[in-house]
Amino acid sequence: MGFTNLVVLLLGVVALTVPSLGTYESPNYGKPPAPVHKPPEVKPTPIYNPPKKEKPEPKPYKPPVYEPPKKPPVYEPKPPVHEPPKKPPVYEPKPPVHEPPKRPPMYEPKPPVHEPPKKPPVYEPKPPVHEPPKKPPVYEPKPPVHEPPKKPPVYEPKPPVHEYPKRPPVYEPKPPVHEPPKRPPMYEPKPPVHEPPKKPPVYEPKPPVHEPPKKPPVYEPKPPVHEHPKRPLVYEPKPPVHEPLKKPPVYEPKPPVHEPPKKPPVYEPKPPVHEPPKKPPVYEPKPPIHEPPKN
Image (cartoon, one colour):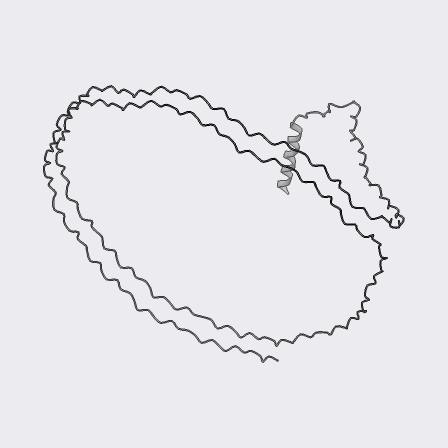
């Protein structure tokens, strides 16, 4: 109880020593209250109801109207048309065209071109390159790895499963359905329609048309065309071109390169790995499964 009394006294002293901050006045003190905003009323959208369709009134029955048979059209023969005979075309001969003889082309000889002799390439001998002998690789022997023998798997026997005998399904017989006999359809006889006999068409014979005999075409002979004799082409001989003799290339012999003899690789023998003998697997016999007799 003494600790609680001390705490209460300390709180009282603190409350007396701390100055009061006074009362709080709101900025809207003495002003009328602000109006409350009310949302505008929303009218419900009208539901469109489509107009109901009125059923059309049944049309009164009209009896069939009798139509007389149509008469076939009569074609009047046309008078023959006289066509005058066609005149053959007349071709006028064209005057011969004089073509002057063509002159052969003249080729001017080109002066010979002097080419200086080519110098053979000169190869500089390369100094021999000394290669140090290669050392054979050294293999470190690996320690033997001991593998423990594998244990054979152990199979646990399953308990026998008891199956109940199946009952055969029972089908309930359906009652017979009575179907009334079908009546054959009734056809009303149609009244016979009277058709007058058709008259065959009458064709009037056409008078024969007279065609005058055709005259064969007449071709006028063309005058011969005079051609001047052609002059033979004359080719001027070209002067011989002097080519200097080519010198054969000279190859300098290369000095022999000394290669040290190669040493054969040395292989270190591996130690034998000891493998323990494997045990044969052991299988436990399964108990027989009891199946009840089927009915």
